[in-house]
Every structure is written in structure tokens, then in C-alpha cells.
Image (cartoon, rainbow, N blue to C red; front, top):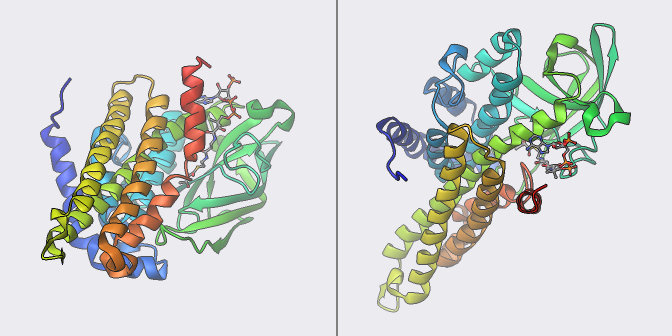
Length: 380
Ligand code: CAA
């Protein structure tokens, strides 16, 4: 077992840390307050290679390993978790799916601009009545000659209003259940696609979340991903990697909270000494640090398995479950350590606490992760 990072991994981590602390930090509170999508930051991060981190250079990506990906998403999410999820969705839900399951033509046309960050992607699985129960898709794509006609509504779509390229999961043969589901590449500018209102969320407020409606949208057959009926399995496989991204984001939120809380505890004095000298505070920080380190190892283990081409679905579910719970706990404690200051925006920790909550919900709730882990234990 080797606990050392390579020079390249450390360089990626440092580059993400530098950008986050130097650039994202400046206006993160403003973006959160005004639900402002970080357009320029995403352009800058694309130039640095962060929008196609895992994509091979052949398709315009940076060709990095998943360990580097974890390190980068953690550093970015320490400062701005909304930027973390925008990057994560583009990389692990959209680029991954295209590189893994797309044809050469689909890769050239759609993956290359997404990996270079010239375009942005979104993954459209959730619906008003199909969140955790993902096989209950109501969006329908009916075959009609050389194309499909797509109708339905998708909900809570990260990057929904800003993305150029959607991966849409839809039912093509309802009588076949999950075996009648397909995945399609749909351009947002296609006739019949409309974007609903921007959701006014509790946290992750500068990532844009929208519903997306499809009315008689014509999707050419060559835009279907993989073989007929493979859409649900593709989506599930994609989410295995997506959950490493969200776990890394939750890890960043938790470690950001620890950094802010430790700094504050060393400066703030009560009863004649810095509050870090009070055991009530020191023990909170010790628990946070220990749990965050355990969460980090779960993320890195899942990433390592993925890089070694070994099964990683259970490991990514464990990483997502544990880091999301750790992020919620660590941010709550960070607010408590800050006392009244923790409840106001300029100290950052209340935002991290609001952001942490979403990591327990999207890309599979904590309860869904427990289903995946327990099914693996029972051998299903
Ligand atoms: N890889 C490949 N295939 C898989 C798979 C995986 N990881 N998991 C399941 N499958 C296959 C199964 O083998 C099965 O196929 P067969 O019948 O041929 O054997 C088929 O898929 C159906 O599987 P299940 O019977 O296990 O399906 P289920 O209805 O019991 O659901 C579930 C399983 C794990 C609960 C799944 O529904 C799930 O993950 N739900 C949560 C969905 C989710 O994460 N949504 C998040 C939305 S995306 C998002 O949030 C993005 C964002 O914007 C940030």
C-alpha cells in the first residue's frame, strides 16, 4: 500500500488550490447571495484543463487519473462547492458517459468541445416522479423512422440552464421496464426544448438547477448512446463515477469547514485564552479532523479502484455516503465553534453548512447509497 501521491497528482492539487484560494474566494459570497453562475471562472478552469480532467487527450481532455480528480474537486469545493459540482457533472456524468459509451462520431462532435470546456454538459435522469426510483421514467422517446420524438419533463437538473449538451434518459418501450430505457444526446438549442425556472435553493446557489421540458423534440437515431435498451445501465454505471465526484465535493466542504473553524479557534479568545485551548472546542476539531481523514481515504480508495479498472460501485457508494454525512456534521460543528459569527455570511461556514446538505441528497441520497452497499453485502 502506498500513501504517497505522484508529482503530477500534487501539481494538480496545487493548481486547483491556487485557483480556488486566489480567484474563487474573492467573490464566492456574492455569487451565493445572488445565485450567480460562475461563467468566467468556468472558462478559466477550462483553460487550466479542469472541465475534461478524466478525458483522454485524444478527445481534448487532460487525461488525468481519478486520484487527481478527487484532489482537485476537494480543493475547489473547500472554497466554492457550486463550482465543484459544475465541474463534477461535466466530467463524471457527461464526458465519462460519452467517452465510455459513445460512437467515434458522437465523441468527435460532442465530447471534444465538452472536454475542452468550450461547451457545458448536463445529465437529465431525475423527473418530478422519478428521483430515487430512477426506473420510473415518464419521459418518452418514441421511434419514428430515422429519429425519436421526445416528450417529458426533467427536474433538478444541475447545469440545466447553462449547459449546451444534455444526456437525456428516456423510456422508449415502457412495457420493457428498465430494459426499455435509452440515453440520448440532445442539444439545448433544439426546437421543442425549454428550460424552466431557476430553482431558488438553500445551498449550492451559484450552480444553476432547472427543470427542462421536451415537447415533440426530434432526436436523430445517431444520437442514441449504446445499444437499444441500455440507457438505465449506462446511467447507473455513470453514477458510480459521479458519486466519486460528489464525495470529493463533500470532502472539500468538510475540510473547508475544518480549516475555517481551526483558524477561528486559534484567534478567538474567551475566558482569557484562545478557544482552541478549551477542551470542548479542541475535541470537536479532533473529531472533525479524524472523520475527514477517514472520508478522504474512502474517496481515494474508490478512485484508486476505478483507475485500476476494478469494480468500484460499492466503494463509491461508501465514499459518497460517508463524506456527505461527514460534511453535514463537520459544517454544523464549524458553525457552532464560530458561535454567533458562524451564523452570518462573511465567515463562510453557514454557506458550507447549506451546501453540505445537498451532498446527502443528489446523485443518490444517503439512503440510496445504503441500499447499494447493503445489496452488495447480500450478494445481489
Ligand atoms: N451498473 C450497471 N448496471 C446496473 C447498476 C450499475 N451500477 N446498478 C443496477 N444495474 C442494472 C441491474 O443489474 C439491473 O439489470 P438486470 O435486470 O439486467 O439485472 C437493472 O440495472 C435494474 O437494477 P435494479 O433492479 O437494482 O434497479 P432498482 O429499481 O432496484 O434501482 C437503485 C436501483 C440503485 C436504487 C437506482 O434506482 C438508483 O441508483 N437510484 C438513485 C438514482 C440517482 O442517483 N439519482 C440521481 C440523479 S442524477 C443527479 O443528481 C445529477 C446532478 O444533477 C448532480
